[in-house]
Amino acid sequence: MTPRRVGGIMDEFEAEHLLVTGGAGFIGSTYVRACLAANPTRRITILDKLTYAGNLANLTEVLDDPRITFVQGDIADPIIVRHTLEGVDTVVNFAAETHVDRSIQDAGSFVLTDVYGLQVLLNTALTAGVRRFVQISTDEVYGDIETGASIESDPLLPRSPYAASKAGGELLARAYAITHGLNLVITRGSNTFGPRQHPEKLAPLFITNALDGKPVPVYGDGLQVRDWIAAEDHCAGIEAVLRRGTAGEAYNLGGGHPLTNLTITRHILELCGRGPELIRHVRDRKAHDRRYAIDCGKAHALGWRPTRPFTEALAETVTWYQEHQDWWRPILESRAFTEHVRNTYEEPSPA
Image (cartoon, rainbow, N blue to C red; front, side, top):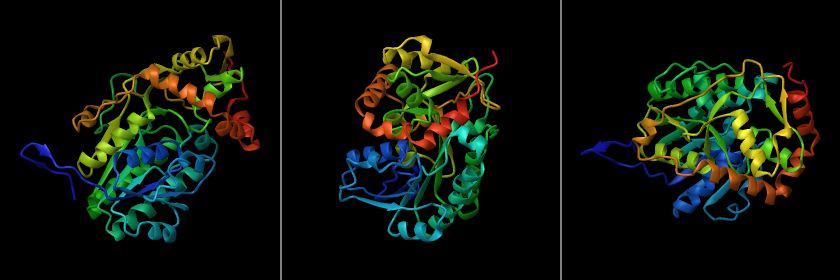
């Protein structure tokens, strides 16, 4: 079923059995919990490789729900994908390597998951007769935006290996929609924050460091601009696109909160009861995009708008990390994470 307009009213696509790939990750698990709460009859199969960023603890509250089936596996494995797609009518693909810094250090794993893994998923979904496919992408595919805001028809000009892998995946997905008629939509989300986000990302890294009184590493001058969106709002946007988006189209999903990295850092420090003395400027990331900005009018036309006030959502996020140290301390204390932080931030800023 493709959503269509009849008499000016949009029919809604109703998913009955979803495959949510990457459903043990940060945004994926948030989406799963929201789906279960809002749709009492919807069944969900979760496929997750459980890499360092996938965590079954993110699904603790829902794993015993009879509507949930969890499968550990890789979207690049056609046998597992074929098995998990049995009886599924909708795919929402969160599975991806996502961290820019890691992509600079090792781009190969990003191409393997974000492009080849997606191809396996697309091809198998086509063969299985899946009726709707949602590809989760990022505003980083547009690259650096000096002025104005990106709209969905703008060219994709990625500047990091991560953004390039997501752009490559998007183009492949679009080709499947055009060549094979796969009923597919794409979402491009802005910087997302909230509980259960892996501490390699800016918000949770700075929150956990601040709670421990450790320096927070700010790239360069910290004046890079990002639009921030609460995870719940991002997931509501994905659901709106799934239900009412036009097949073959992409939709920007932003929170409408453009902030410099230095500004959000100061917000986090204040919420953690710390001062600016914890800010440590480090050497800037290679080819660091200066500014992202997206126009979300197309998604707003579907009836979606973010509803969470930024300061409230950020404060609740800080509180969650304060109250769930058993979730993040083992990650921060692991050898792999310690080495990642050292390799990424060890060089001081020359400024």
